[in-house]
Amino acid sequence: MIVMDNVCKTYKVAKRNAGLKEACRHLFHRETEEIRALTDVSFQIADGEMVGYIGPNGAGKSSTIKILSGILTPDCGTCSVDGRIPWKNRIEHVKQIGVVFGQRSQLWWDIPVNDSFELIKEIYSIPAEQYKHTLDELTELLSLQEILKTPTRQLSLGQRMRCEISASLLHQPKLLFLDEPTIGLDAVSKLAVRDFIKKLNKEHSTTVLLTTHDMQDIEAIAERVILIGKGKVLMDGTLQDMKDLVRLTDDAQSKKNDAAQSRGNDAAQSCMDTDITGKENDNLDQIVAKLYQQLDIL
Amino acid sequence: MKKYISFFRVRFATGLQYRMAAVTALTTQFFWGLMECLIYKALMESNAVSLPMGYPAIVSYIWLKEAFYALFNTWATDNDLFGMIVDGGISYEFCRPVSVYGMWFARSLGSRVAEAALRCGPVLLCAIILPAPYRIGPPAGLTAFLFFLLTMFLSLMVTVSFCMVVYMLCFFTISPTGWRILFTGAVEFLSGSVIPLPFIPQPYNSIISFLPFASMLNVPLRTYSGDLAGNALIQAVFLQIFWFIVLYLFGYRLCHKAENRIVIQGG
Image (cartoon, rainbow over all chains, first blue to last red; front, top):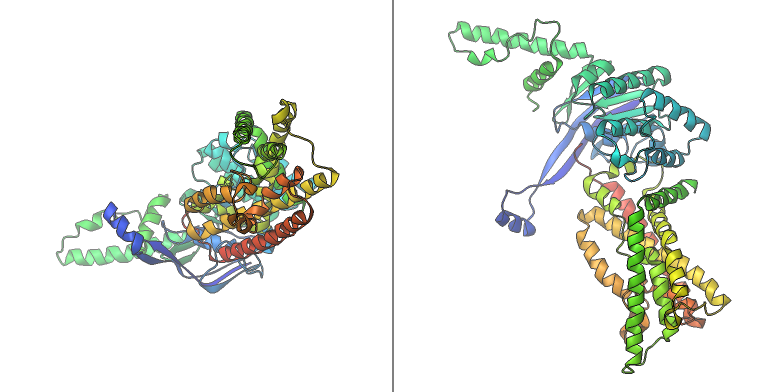
């Protein structure tokens, strides 16, 4: 059970204009700007749920994941995961969770993947029996046989990502946070990863929180979608709810446009969003793009 | 404990991964040691100065320094750790159910011991079969040898806990370059890595010998040849323990502070 309650987080970001002169000035006079990554985030996720966490670039998705995994301390609000406060009981907390940061690597660069896995086994004190079983399972599901003996630096991005995901699951966490896990994967690997996550949820009832920009990931995996923008939760429901939301606002807009048109105004700009609405097989990316525009969170 | 040993294992495996790197480092160390021996020989024969250490003591100092170089050099910090701090890869480090300080300490210790274990054999072997004046002598006695082992362990602890402080400081300055430049020069010199500390004139010598840097390689290397013995040795051992505790506590506090204020943006 994950509970986030009015969580906010602010970053200080150094800002200056380009140029050498500006750089020199900056040496003595620092200008920083406060960026509110999260202004007010509240949601609850029950055990065994698979939740897609979406939002435009810079919406605060990764920040949320980092708070939930105990890496960052929020400025205000409360957050508890199975009754633990992630950043306070960090060590206890991380034993129970698995995290994949799609843009970072947890495997040791110079040594074969197998050695990295062995180390992770020791770090989490995984019993030998359980380790072997889990590894066999992961090897089969993510087809790792060939790549386990290769040093990480010689793996392709997709191969590495499959290893990263496995590495995060060796200790059989009850909770899995995935931060863009399908980044850079080919179609086959993507499908494999999606199937794998679904299977994991089904068999071990692992709770999954997934952030991604690939809407097909969401469609394939998430039963529930949480949409955030500018650090706030804007929608929390099923994928269908999200589509409906677009449709509703779209309808309202087109009515307004119709009215405007009848008053004789030139409504050429309304052409750009002609009917995505009526079609059944809407392109998800277009829907989401439209939603971001309508909600004005870009 | 097993967790920490496995960090050592991984570092050892990493050290073994690249053969050419090990061979070239060995060659450098051998020639560097030989060169230093020759310099001191020339110094001694010029008769212009009276050396504060006996020539055999200097020779064993030099060869031990080269053989166990990886244990004590403060500038050979773990670049991966700096990299992680700078680019945010540290996210994963915080997702491990171990204390960050403990994990990194084990990691640094592991890489140092692993590297030294790979290199000390060949260098020492060369130092033993060299002709007379440049050959490394036996330890000054059994007590001296035992104290050599003890002080070597302690100085390794001091060195690693010192490097931990450097890593932790990087959390606060982001760029590690400044700290590293400062430490390459100053600490190298003050720890006796460039010239043995007895060569530094008074009164600087007595000040320097109380600094934490003098508790690093200076102590074991001089203990071996008996240059450091008796009360001075006992004092040095206590000073090593003192500095280890101080540096450990300081690094640990810094780590704790860093954990609470860490910022990882993007991705």
